[in-house]
Length: 369
Image (cartoon, rainbow, N blue to C red; front, side, top):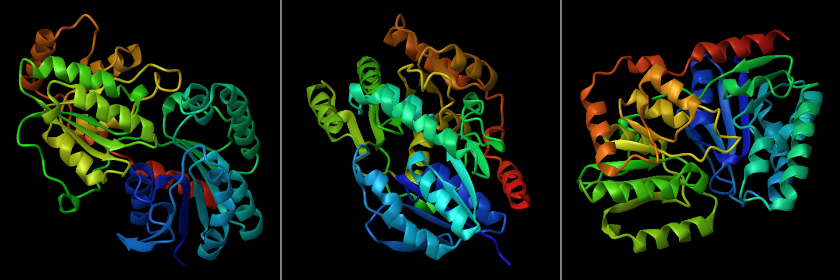
């Protein structure tokens, strides 16, 4: 009899890169029937690539609905009656406990982020709330480790921070599951630099614009900002910044309040001149290897990244791109870019590929328990 898996998230869209294109598609290829409950059009249902996708409505990250939705999702999760449920954020752990006790299901907790660290360093949380909420979240996660069947971490630097007994590391390497037939946008007419992924100040949004302006004064690059943000006020700040730019006609924003299809992101990366990864080195960011790194390496496109010893070492091993230094002027940066583009790649793109075997090993392990 075919085994089934259901992914549940309240923060991510049903076609989230890690959940849909990496975990779910891998599990489907291994012979599992896969369902996903996640954000999208309210109460919508559809199938895609023979997966069952159930949408729940969007809400603000800090909204209390985020916690209440575990109860809202419960009837649908029970009706699916999966053999394995994968939970993608800490507020769903209580739901997972119910599914384990009453349906005898296996439970996986997939840790995309160090959620407690994110809260402590997150600017979208009130300062007075950050540390108490972070401690509460971490205590709740560690308590759940007594009964979850497995924990999968997206980063090696997390080093089993929750003290789980059955641990797997599934790094966010590159997965080219989105095909050219899924592309829905056209490219700029002229060479462009690309800021892709979450639109956020701490992801180096405004630093990317500033550096692009200095470069485009010497070489007429366009700039594409492609991604999504939960912060409406940030989009207003971005529009004001664009209007104030001397080169505002060369800036294109794709997404914003809407998620950008993964195929479109990969399409933009494949054709850009250089990517922008100017992350602020906050504690919850500095030791990570963002998915964006693998996406640019797989496309053989350089990424301009923040000065960080971890990333400099990674660059030396994998040919990531160009390490940004504040002393570097536009002429010097263009010289680095031209030199990078003319040097041959040292690795095949398959070196950065998502490893389905890791997913298979995890599923075999928990089904034996």
